[in-house]
Each structure stands twice: as C-alpha cells, then as structure tokens.
Length: 200
Image 1 (cartoon, helix red, strand yellow):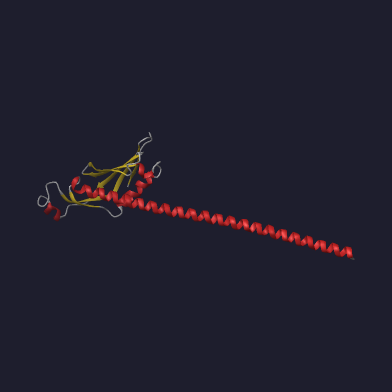
Image 2 (tube, one colour; image 1 turned 60 degrees about the vertical axis):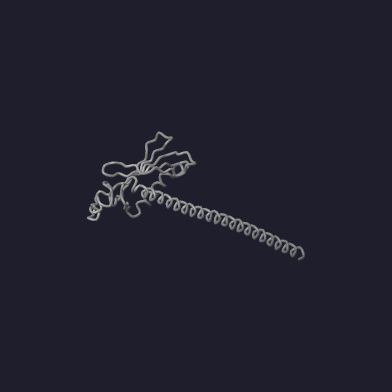
C-alpha cells in the first residue's frame, strides 16, 4: 500500500510539472506573439506616419510651384504679353504643378534638379515668358518646357474695343485668356533617351 501511494504521488508530481511546463511554454508563445504584434503595430504606425508626411510635403511643394507659375504670369502681363490681366481657367495651374512633380519624381534630385522654361503659344507663335531654376545650389539634371495656350474661342468685348487706342498704347490688349490645355516637355540633360511629352 505504501509503494502504491508513492507511485501515485510521483505520478501527480509529474503531471503538475508537465502542466507548469506547458503553461510556461504557452506564456512564452503568448509573449512572443504580443511582441511580434507590437512590432507590427510599430512599423504600421511608422509607415502611416511616413505616408502622411510625404503627402504633406507633396502638397506643400505643389502649392509652392503653383505660386511660382502664378507669379511668372503676373510678371509677364505687361513686360511680355502686353495686357492688363491674364485670365486663367480654374485649377489649370494646379494641374500643371502636379504634372511637373510627376515628371520630377524619377530624377536623382527630384524637382530641385530642374530648369523650367515657361512659354505661351499665342497667335501661332511661341512666346518665351520666364526661366525658373528651382534650386540654384543643385546642378540641373533635366529641363521642362511648359507651354500655355491662348484660348482662341474668345472674342474681345465692346469694353476692350473702347480701351484699344485710348487708355493703352497700340498693341496693348485688355485681357488675355488661357486655354485649359497645355503642353509639358521633359528633356534629360545627361541622357540620350528621348524626351517625354505630356499634352493636356
């Protein structure tokens, strides 16, 4: 009877030890799972934050580009275009800025390595308006030629006829309206590959 009791106790002790070992292993696996989950949450959080920061940066750059093009047209009114105002279709400049960013994204220095030539196609001629060097501290790696287009479907109003030859010098127009379309040409400065043309 004593031997039987000893065997029973030994069996119970073994069962308890195995149970504790299984609990320890289960706790270890749960701990590893929690750590892995925490690591995944950390990387997901960082990737989300990087994505948000990139979107914010892209938006700020797009706004800056838009302002540069608007200032370019404003300066060209009297010096190159000889008009009192330039009428720009809604969101045209923003569309141009986004396409410029898209063409710059594959370049080593991005937009900072660009030279942008701004032109206007008017009366079957291409008039040069401005040359924009985005970052003068960076050696340019590519050129972009932007060509705005005059809206040929507009007729001068009676008010414009009254202004011509009176308040303004000969050849000075009251307003010039741009077309919603434009052309954007990209040329790499250190590559023999053909240029990229975007026409909208």
